[in-house]
Amino acid sequence: PMGTCPLAKMSLRDNFTGLLHLWARPDVLTCTSWGAPILWDGTFDPDVAQQEAIQQNLTIGLTVFAVGRYLEKYLARFLETAEQHFMVGQRVVYYVFTERPAAVPRLPLGPSRQLRVERVQRERRWQDVSMERMRTLHAALGGRLGREAHFVFCMDVDQHFSGAFGPESLAESVAQLHAWHYHWPQWLLPYERDARSAAALAPGEGDFYYHAALFGGSVEALRELTAHCAQGQQRDRTRGLEARWHDESHLNKYFWLYKPAKVLSPEFCWSPEIGPRAEIRHPRLLWAPKEYALVRD
Ligand code: UDP
Ligand code: MN
Image (cartoon, rainbow, N blue to C red):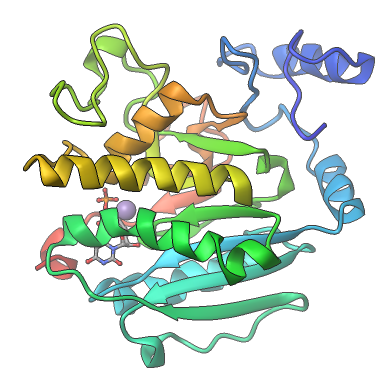
């Protein structure tokens, strides 16, 4: 009931809204070949989504990792803007994973919003910090986070919210179209191509290129996703391999095998460096400029 897609759902109301979506955004693809909605501005009613979510009395988790210099550089703004835009009016629990819990900024939080800090090891290589998220998230989803949240979003910290990011984005599993790649032909997409890697996609495979800076879903679905990706990464490691784009390569393999129930348009995670685009009407999250020299060792 949270997503609508023309002809994919049988209810009269859904089909009606699905047709409205086609009419609302004739300029973009609003539905995948397997019937999942692709959320573009104008294709959903945020008030309806808000009411549905309130009736279900949901708790929504938001996980973010801030290890090493990423903490000072990005975390405060990420959290401050999440307070303004992320699931406002819902029950929210933030999970911040860091090796320095004492350095996490103490932010005044809105009602029904909580922040929990979990200690993680600091990996030596940034690639390992990024990839270790899958294993850590898997464990967290099997623990307290999994018990207290119904749906969870997992995000990079090097971005900030710039528009309402509400329960219209919720679904059993949610994937984010990558801002740099959403209009590229399939054969050019930067999937892992080394057939020895667990993340490999063969020529002709792949629906979209998804961005690992944002994925989400139910606790159950994310347990599966994180287990699959962590196992793939571990298998590669034992073979002396590392996928081209690390956890993102494994995430793309996962969503090729197990199609997401909802896809977010690049409006939900946009890179301002791309410049204005007619179809990007209402960005909700903006990437920070890539200042790798400052944050990576
Ligand atoms: N990260 C971190 N410390 C690091 C490396 C990565 O906290 O040293 C976390 C952080 O949340 C970051 C995410 O892992 O946003 C992914 O890394 P990054 O954003 O650098 O990757 P990119 O977006 O450039 O692919
Ligand atoms: Mn990032």
